[in-house]
Amino acid sequence: MRRKVLFGVDYTNNELIKVILYLFVGGTAALVEWSLFYALFYYVLAGLGLGVDVLTLVATTLAFCFSTLYHYFLGNVLVFDSGSKYNKGKELSLVFLVSVMGLVFNLMFMYVFVGLLHWQPMIAKVITSCLVVVWNYLSRKKWIFRS
Image (tube, rainbow, N blue to C red; front, side):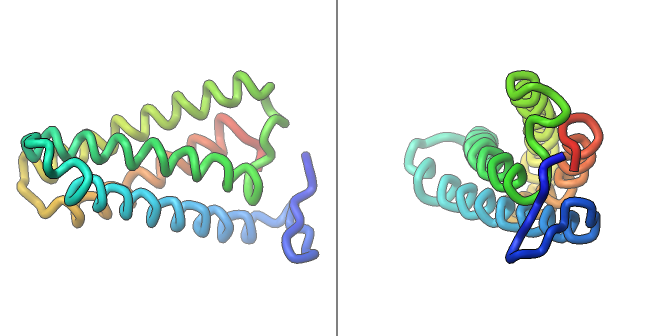
């Protein structure tokens, strides 16, 4: 396992610091995702004449993909030991698989909350993100990386 050092503190074997850093990475990734979703939903894609359901799904997909990329790189730097459990190719494949499953969960929740229950899209996005973060952390920790 590679050493993890931040501000001169070695936290390689300190799970509490790793969880705190994971929450930081996830929290900032959520802010990136929510900001992009908001901008895409209300400004960038709004003028295309798409229905609310299609607009919700497209904005959710794009925002989720970008924030997942952000999360992957920052998580590898601060939390996980990239390349120690699998070679980079297999690791990247597993990250994409986990991310696609996370995206499916995102889309399902957004469809239910916005399309069926008619919740306000931004509130639905925040709640959806909170639900999907559990899947993201557990799957990465258990199946992909050594933390």
